Image (cartoon, rainbow, N blue to C red; front, side, top):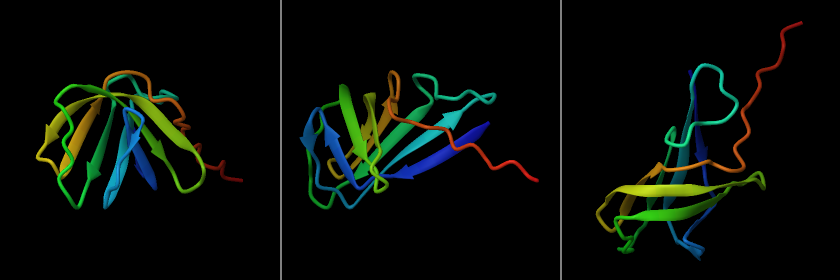
Length: 104
């Protein structure tokens, strides 16, 4: 099993940009799979002010500092207005597995 924590530089929920203090996507790959299963990824967004996000399914987009983007549908697992935790509920588009270099 492999896992990745990818820090976001921008985040959108249902196409609306969210101002945040921290956001990431956590991905698990099982048994050497090249992409995560529909529910093998999570995302979290922390805001410095209260941002209402409904307890439902949302389309998420995360922009990474290297210029790449991750997009996918997710369900809100928890929100208190400032901390929002999402569970993947479909394909995570844009994820690329890091392949370790081959030893000489």
